[in-house]
Every structure is written in C-alpha cells, then in structure tokens.
Image (cartoon, rainbow, N blue to C red; front, side, top):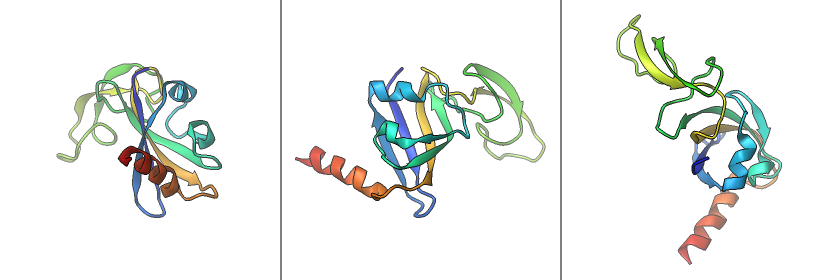
Length: 133
C-alpha cells in the first residue's frame, strides 16, 4: 500500500484535518467500505468514531458509493462522485473506483460521528510543535 492520507472532517466546526498514516496502520482499514463507521483508536484517535465518506486511489480516480469492489471501471453517470455539474440530464462515461478500500487507495475521506474526550485539535497541535523544533 502506498502512503495513505486520511482527511478528517469535523461537522461541528467545519474544519478538516489531514494526517498521513503509518504503513502498519493503513492496512487496518483495508476492506472497509464507504459508509462504514470504525473506531478511530486504531489510527491514534482514542474514543473517536469516524465514518468513511469517500477517497481516491493512487492515480487519483475517485471512489464511488454504490459501486462495489476495488476495481476501476468506466461507468455512465450524470451526477455524484467523479463528475462536475455541467448540464441537466447529460451523462458522461467516467472512470471510478469501487467503494471498498484496498491496497491501491491513496486517500481516505472521513467525518467524525462520535467525539472523544480530547479535542481533535490537540492531536494535530502536538505534531506541529515537534516539526517546528
């Protein structure tokens, strides 16, 4: 698995946070699907729960909910993940990736569903302090 970034969205504040997962931690998320809720303690966020909302593979193709598996496929779509709004009722053939996280996943988008005792900012402030020293 390549370097995996996890993008965490906080619905209360509207902020997003980015963290690069270590090699052993990213393997724990393989086979989760879009919409799955997982305990974020496995990726160093104790007492938090995250819901997977999307992601991309190593080449930048978006994951699409409702398209099972881990393979890439060209599908006809008119809206949703992987397409920009152009005209009404116009369908495009786009390359998308299935909704299951695999070894080829490079980015995982999540949102917080259950908050822990510590604020989410505290996990990222410690990292910034160590990098600046």
